[in-house]
Image (cartoon, rainbow, N blue to C red):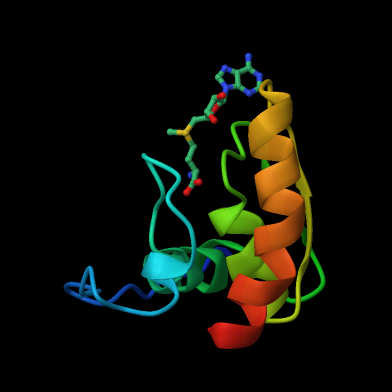
Length: 95
Ligand SMILES: C[S@@+](CC[C@H](N)C(=O)[O-])C[C@H]1O[C@@H](n2cnc3c(N)ncnc32)[C@H](O)[C@@H]1O
C-alpha cells in the first residue's frame, strides 16, 4: 500500500495583470503569488519548509507565508534580495 497522494491542482489559474498583488512591484519575471499557492498546497505537507533557490522578488516565499509555511530563498542579486525582503510580508498579507 502506498501513502503517496495524487496532487490536486486546478485546471487553470487566472491572475489579471491589474491584480494588486501582481502590481505590488515592478520586478520583471515575477510569478503571481496566487498561481504558486496551489502548487505549495499540492506538493507539500503542512509544516514543511518551502525552498526557492532562485527567489527573485520572493513570490514563492510570499505564497508559502500566505498559507502558513516557512520558506527559505536563495537569490544571487543583492538588489532582488532587498526587493524580496520588502515585498514578501506585503505580498503575503495581500494574498
Ligand atoms: C525567473 S527569476 C525568479 C522569479 C521569481 N519566481 C519571482 O516571482 O520573483 C530567477 C532569479 O534567479 C536568480 N538566480 C540566477 N542564478 C542564480 C543562482 N545561481 N543562485 C541564486 N539565484 C540565482 C536571478 O537573479 C533571478 O532573480
